[in-house]
Length: 396
Image 1 (cartoon, one colour):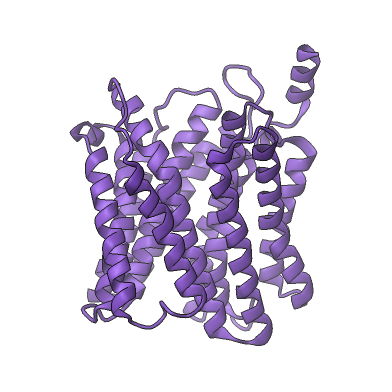
Image 2: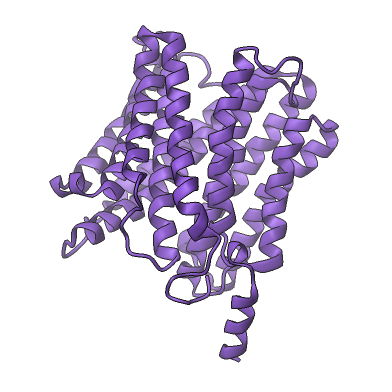
């Protein structure tokens, strides 16, 4: 039976053998194309072509629910196999799941009738939550149930954003997407809190990883979803002292966590310093939001992009680079060019968050160029390995 199962697994095209393959590749290809497309639209270079809701609505929505959610799906569909000891989704079911994601991306760009767009858009996050929930429920792995809860909350705020789109309510659409961004920040904190100290220990050959503080993890697990709820109901959109205090607390907690993980040896290992710097942008984003709520910062866009470009984009690039190596049977040493990709991502974030204040137009285009080049390098170097059999000959 085991031989037959192996033969069956090996008969599946490599791209569909495990969830990280199509979603890492598809998500990063989407990322490298979406930002230049947005900049061209913003500069008036696309004529009369308009996606559903217009280009600003598309930009807000798709870099979260198109790009980030695809990478989250790829990571979770690979991780759940390790967590549960059960085979991950592959073959035709995986192709259907990836197809739902792709169909929704095309639906936004082609401005399909809104009822059809809504159906396609919500099908993917709900299907992903169902797959994850079923896998975890079968082995009663309660530790990871919060991940399913976050996926369902993401589907809920996506639904709210679609209600805003349907009713022409830009404020509802915007605050729903912002709620989704902070739900992803919650997942970044949850997953990052597990893997960054572990990867640091393994990457530096240390005897043990930094042990978590349960109270710190709990506060961070509750804090970002609370921010998301405040955005969803519209209470965090306007400056508020109490919301600012919540952001300040989150900033301190993230800095404490990052300081506990720190080891000077990370600067010798690109797969490690890229993770730590991405997490640092998360702490800086919380600090920037606190300052805006306190009336000490003029524009909330800067801390928001510290979160989406620096933390989310940086953590995604670092995670897909490492996870793809491990799950394709390769040594944990990034291929040529990936160190430069990590540097480009950091430069792009600095341009979007800092340089743009001094050089608005140039800073924006430089940020977009650095972002796209970083993900283009990933697609160039990792695309072939994601589409080919593991080096060790194992399925997956």
